[in-house]
Image 1 (cartoon, rainbow, N blue to C red):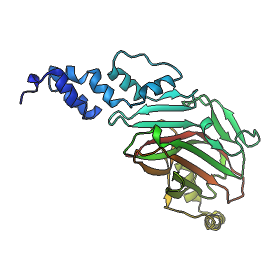
Image 2 (image 1 turned 180 degrees about the vertical axis):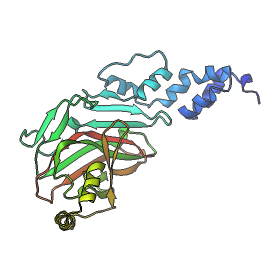
Image 3 (image 1 turned 90 degrees about the vertical axis):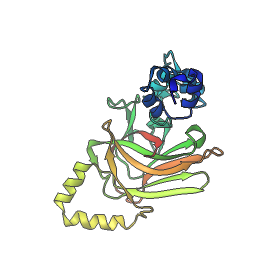
Amino acid sequence: MNVDLLPEDCFAHILSYTSPRDVCRLSLVSSTVRFAADSDNVWEKFLPVDYQEILARLVLPLVYISKKELFMRLCSPVLIDQGKKTFSLEKSTSKKRYILGARELSITWANNPLYWTWKPFLQSRFTEVAELRTISWLQITGKINTKTISPKTQYAAYLIVKFAERAFGLDSLPSEVSLEVGNGSFKSQGTVYLRWQERKKQLECLGHLYFLHRDEALRSRVSEGDGERFAREREDGWIEIELGSFYNDGGDGKEVKMCLKEVKGQHLKGGLIVEGIEIRPKE
């Protein structure tokens, strides 16, 4: 069948049932397909149904001349809600993703300057981050409603952090991570060591019996839940820690609660720099 014989609006309607990735590939087939692939009718289907509401929450307005251009601009994170969150779309699937900035999180004693410092950070997408000075009770919690994210999608939540040069006590005991949907209808749990790869290598090389015995004694106090998670470096230079994953069935809106805590060791720790929590489709 010669696709050039199809009316442009008919082909645009067909394309709207594919994906952004497919549309970009099919646009190379012919000039007829390319014109249809650039249609506002096609790209509006890839925008979230509440995109006008999202645009109203932007810190800085977006300038665009077509729905395709708007979609492409939203594939790069934009600040919303007084700069406390970022919003973006997955380019290949048009699924929503958010980052809740540190100011949008509940961090125990974050407003006490003895324990936490709020400051600008050059590498952050937000105006400020939270840096842990010293504390024994570490607890960071974020919340999001399932109505605000894409339905019929598997999501995961990631704590985004860095470690200051002076960081101490963060990897003496594994931190507990958890994610809960609704009123306990779904819950996942695990543990993670707040350490970066270089520090991990140093500890492995040292192998001092004192630290080994101490870690074993402390570790016995923590329930591992679903297993140990690992910190990994992101493309933007930050470090992310998976807090848990869940499937958003698209039903009634439910609250998703994500948490990292270390409250059992009773030892001092410091030097953790918190940028926020990202909620994105899980690969």
